[in-house]
Amino acid sequence: MLLSIDGTFLIQIANFILFWVLLNYLFVAPTRRAIEARQRYVSGLYSEAADFAAQAAALRAQAEDILNVARRETQERMRAAAAQASEEAHGIEQQALNEAAATVQLAHGTVAAERAEALAKQQRFVVELARSMVERATAVEHA
Image 1 (cartoon, one colour):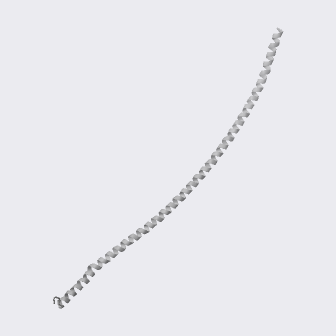
Image 2 (cartoon, rainbow, N blue to C red):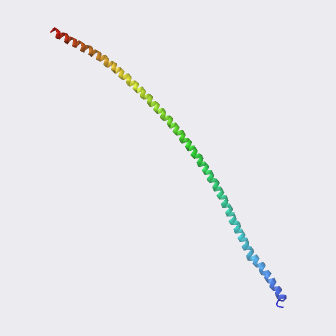
Image 3 (cartoon, rainbow, N blue to C red):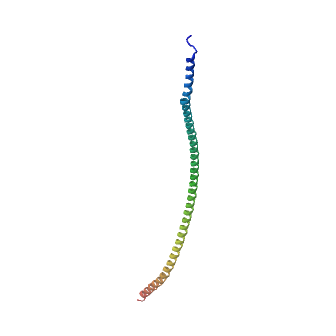
């Protein structure tokens, strides 16, 4: 027989088992633990990255909401300011019209007073002119 089970064979099997146990204890088990720890670390990083991505999406949505509120407030304030400016412009226009009407009224009063004064002065001049003309006309007839 080619293979005989004797003491050498049993020692070889014991050597192989001892080598396998030592190899497993010194190299395979630590390598497996390091690989598993690395996989857990990478998995944790992926999980953390997913959490950060979710937080970033929530913050983006929150920022968009804040921007929308700010846009709405700005539009409302712009509309209110435009309405107020329109009201103020209408008030200024009305005040200018009132002042213009008062100025025109005052001008009419001034013109009427000056006209009356001119007529009064003219009346004396017309009377004197008429007397002068009558005197000349009567003086020419007498001469």
